[in-house]
Amino acid sequence: MTPFPAPAGQLLGVRLLPASAACDHEYWKTRLVNPRLLLGAVAVALYRLPLLAVPVGADRRGGFMDLANPIFAEVLAGALRGRPGFNQVTVSGQVVRWGEPIPEGLAPDARRRFQGLREEPRYEPCKRPPAGHVGRGAGVRSMSPVPESPPGRQPTSTWAAVEAGAAQAP
Picture 1: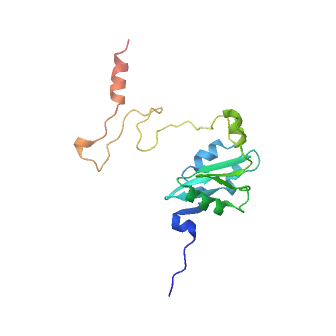
Picture 2: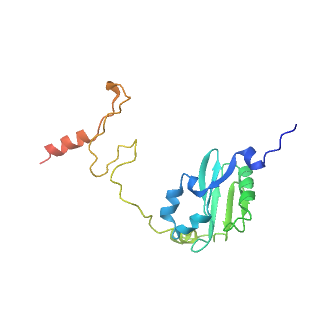
Picture 3: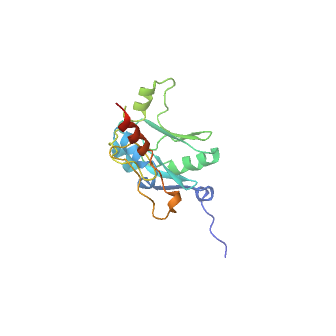
């Protein structure tokens, strides 16, 4: 019995997944003028790291994705062709573009508007830093010990030195 040949995209490790699987989904969600475009977006998994390809529409006139290799770019272009919002798919080297071609010499603000992005990202204030970060968020003064760590290898707080210096300040 002969096995069925795998599609070229699977052999090269390029897969399309639901948009929510992309590691940069929240990044795009906070920056797009029209976050509803995420409904037609797809996560492109290359080397097991899924990144978001956002379609054109509403306020977004064009998009692109820079891949590691022209062969990967060709495979991705083939996978995007025919999908709603991914019209006029072209490949130039390792870059895949869709939608209108971006005009040359656009100022950064105009380029951002062309791609349907906000002028300033919508950030939520962070009360606590993400796990693994010592950050300078409000209310963060010390790190609790990690139960699995030996006593001599516990994390130390840089805030202790900052608080000591602040207490001595006039």
